[in-house]
Amino acid sequence: MGKRRRVAERRTAPPGVIGGVIALVACGAGLTAYTLYGGGSAAGESSATAHHENVRTGPVSAAEVRTAATRFLTSWQRGEVADAAAVTNDPSAATALLTGYGKDAHLTGVTLTPGTATGAKVPYSVKATLAYKGVSRPLAYSSSLTVVRRASDGKPLVDWHSSVVHPDLRDGDTLVTGDSGTPPVKALDRDGGELTAARYPSLGTVLDGLREKYGKKAGGTAGVELRVVRGKASRKAKLSDKTLVTLSQGTPGTVKTTLDPKLQAEAERQVGRKARASVVVLRPSTGEILAVANSAHGFNVGFQGSLAPGSTMKIVTSTMLFEKKLVSPNASHPCPKTYKLAGWTFHNDDNSEIKKGTFKTAFGVSCNNAFIDFAPKLSNSDLTKEAQEVYGLGMDNWAIGVPSFDGSVPVQSGAQMGASLIGQGGVRMNPLNMASVAATVQSGRFHQPYLVSPDVDHRTLAKAARTMSAKTQAQLKDVMKFTADYGTAAKAMAGLGPDYGAKTGSAEVDGQKKPNGWFTAYRGDLVAAGVVQAGGHGGDTAGPIVADLLRMGG
Image 1 (cartoon, one colour):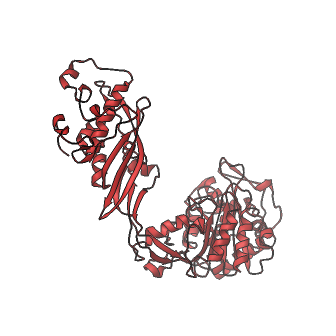
Image 2 (tube, rainbow, N blue to C red):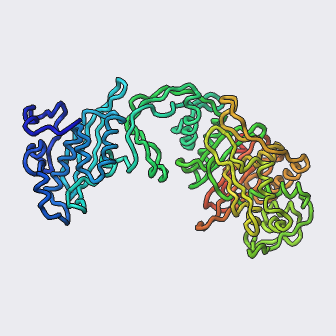
Image 3 (cartoon, one colour):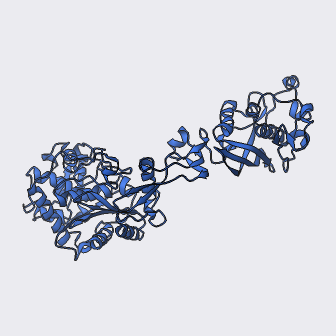
């Protein structure tokens, strides 16, 4: 650190060592030892001479690229941060990151070897030693810099970006060596077996969530790593911190989950047969989550998805209609082919209609307009209140043990309110939410789903404001059993009776040729719900997945 030494002082050292650090290796780009060590006018041109020259324009020359690159790399290697930063077009940002390279990242013994320049771009390799609390490890990687001409005076400078220091850095990111944040965890299933992403690929994000919440509480100790810590712009782009070098792994703590290993394995197998499928299995009497699986493993749609649930939402709508005594299962209730509401014309699937039939029949075959035609008798907030007060949805207060989305049923008016009655409009759910809906029907009351017992960390589970009446529960079970026996769920649920019920759903999505297919069902003390995105009708797509898991767990 400090001021640049005079050339004569540097030449007293042996050719390979400058001030106790390894000299920059000149190769490929024509960086001679004379240029590298500061000799000649190219490296030490006086300001007086530059002042009298005309401002240069146009592309930088090969000589200018060599000179700027050499001065920057040589200064960086020597630890002369101010000198290195001065050769860039953003000295402030360069100073901060280059200072942090040693101070925060704990990288020492830096050796930089330039390669052959291509135009204004100079590649180079980096070798350094990562040393932290008595533990060290070598680090090697490649990067590059580009030389540009400053518009104000034509001076050739290194175009500063954080990627100059390391290719994984974006502007605003930093390098930090220290504790890995949260200690690792060893997650166990309900039988005590270890859960790993290698065995259960869908659990990658779940295991990350368990580590984040329970790493310290479970008694583990954090490891030590060099990582990229994302800045504001990277976080906005949804980039996560990235580990570059692990110095020590840390000691994992142990956390037990409610997952059933057999159901989890079968759920993984089932969703693996579809391109975009997700499923969740619950124990309705307790709320325990027994399985969660997704075809894609980068995002947990089962817990965190936010999708229109289509006609599976008619369970909540029917609860509201029964409680308000607006209809009963066996009441005569036609389903017109079309229904106009606030300027919109609603159609049934395949333009079907039921001229003479019961509400149970309309529920069983999922006839939309038999539900939407109740809209004029409802307040805008009625469905929202029903979802929140009876089913515990949309309150943003579930604490299942890992991140989850608790559903959303916003207050809407006009045609959007009508659409929400059939699970469209602004209504958003995921398989966890819809499994909980069916579980509430089966048990008669809301039990917040959970993956980790609240006894582990003494957290408070969400509760519903009120419980549906026994009469309403019986009515819901009646229409859901009819759907499983004779309606759109009959094919998938064949052979699973008698204590069962189901509801199918198809949710239209802009830009998709086929709707998202939904299915939620219970059998005894087991519930499952699933979605196949862009798959088609729920009875044909998600239905077989759900039914298989109910059959296996029964």
